Every structure is written in C-alpha cells, then in structure tokens.
Image 1 (cartoon, rainbow, N blue to C red):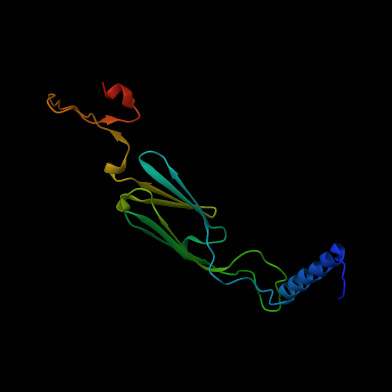
Image 2: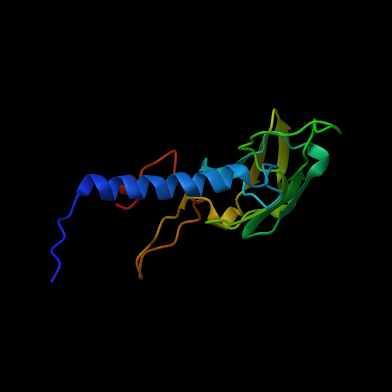
Length: 167
C-alpha cells in the first residue's frame, strides 16, 4: 500500500492552472460581442392611482423599440445594434450585449391599457400605467344588516383613515 500525503498547496496550484486554462480559452476564443438576446433592467413603482415602469436601455434608439400593453402585462422588445465597427478594425473586448431583447412582466394590478403614456429620455423608457378604477385603493363604508343605508360616496383612502370610517 502506498501512503501519499496530501499537500494543500499543490492542490491549490493545480486548481489555479485549470482556471487559467479555462480563462485563456475564453479570451483567445472569438472576441466579438455577444449577439445573443439580452434582458434590460427594469423598475416598477406603485404611486397610488398609477404604476411607473422604467426600463434602462442605453444605446437603444426609440425607433428600435416596440411596446405592448395589456390589462395585466407590459412587453417591450427591440434591438441594440453594434455601432462603430468599421472594416479593418477589431474589437478586443466588450462587456456590452448587442442584438435583440424581449422583456415581459406581469403587472400586480389591472391597468387601463388605452391610457398608457410613454417617454424615452437618455436611454430610459418610462411608462405611466393608470390603474383600473376598481384596483385603486378606495375605502368603502360598510353597513351592518338592519342599519339604514346612506347615499354617501366612497371615501378616499388618502383623506380619512379606516378606523375613522368604521365607527
């Protein structure tokens, strides 16, 4: 039986050489930018009567965007073309993804998709999505059976608290 002693430094060196080989293969491969699809970063804010949807699309032109809105979802798609590449030049390295993108998000509440407004400024797409009126936070006065029903309009959640309206 052969007794072999474990040397952690030797194992670490072997692992480092394997990683170096992997990274060398990646770098020496095709250095052209990725033309696979990519996903833009988004934010969704609730501002009471409407939602604010922001998509960060640096390098994308407004003409290259397509926006679709349904009551339950928002879909944006488009492309970011590679610019600046001329014949005789070679790209050494790029972290930027080029090509087409497609992003769909299910909304937490229903919106009035015919009333959506959009703006596109310095690579940021901003959509204002008005909520369907039934989805807005309204407080209704609830009466018990046997109580007389008053013809009061619904209370606005921002003007009175729930504890004041249920007495």
